[in-house]
Length: 446
Image 1 (cartoon, one colour):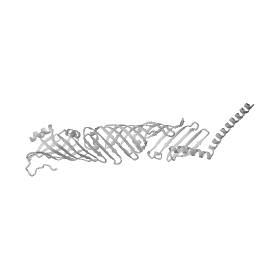
Image 2 (cartoon, one colour):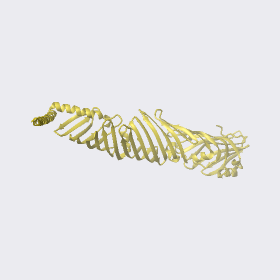
Image 3 (cartoon, one colour):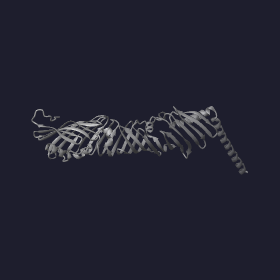
Image 4 (cartoon, helix red, strand yellow):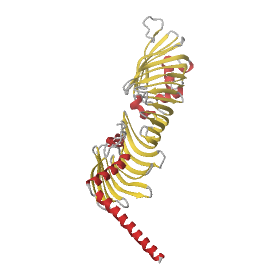
């Protein structure tokens, strides 16, 4: 008897619990359908969205027993979401007209679409975005932290730099991007770029850049660039608004740098350096030269005669330790050079001088020889003076027009004999011979 009473009582309790549960659900649904309930739900959703998009406002909200649609807006940016509530399975469309209203680190436009769903404890957003003329597939998991996996291709490099608020208008090309961020870790971003640099020089390049970042103002990066001018490896960091990097440049073709260096330097060279945005100065150092670049380039060098003439792309004329300073502005450069313990090389030039004057420069020690002058993208104008008492050479405003035209008046003195020679485009001839003791001698004095 007691068992029957207990079973009936238990059945009533279960039935009563079921009715109460149904009542609560019905009450909740009815509450949601009232203006007060709708307002509460709107605030709850806004609070969730505000965690990731601060300041966003729900401008439209409609829902039934197990479906909903809403529109959220911040500034000129609108996102629409619609789908099922339990379990959450929704679609979204986003039209971002001004990225800077969502983040101070970016600007420009973006369109995106995809789906939103719950996976275990993660809130998942998966879809595709279109920006900078390229497409990116992405998957974002939101919980206590954020994890992101995204991959896209064919982004317009110039438009991508604009979105990133990087003012560098001299490059164009296509970029592939891959983004990975696991929970409680930094962003890892890889850029693969095929492009062209156009700023005084014109060069194609391929680059792979890896970035680790907390945000745009706190990141480190490494980049390997293969370009027509040579190969460059960069590694640096950005903190707040200041950034710096170190670089290692290998097999740099100096001739292809003529639009910047003005003079058609020859040969290939290697150098390293560092750039700091705080003073906007790039410092560099090679085997036998060092210098800096800001609005101008200034370098000092010290090398043997063979290396020097390899650099300037002229037949080697002399041996000696050659050092000096070169300064280059945008359209004009100057140089001040000295050759110590100078000896001329025996070659066609010295043979022709010996034939015309009887002086064998290859057997003479001309001591120090000074060169100074200026140059632009078309020609170099220089003065030259040697200091040996027994033999001297001097040039006033000799001209070298690239690539191989020159006109130089050379005064050559040995003992009391002074020769005025014209060197022009491979030819040498004597213009005048005189006695050094004459008052009107034309030997140049710096």
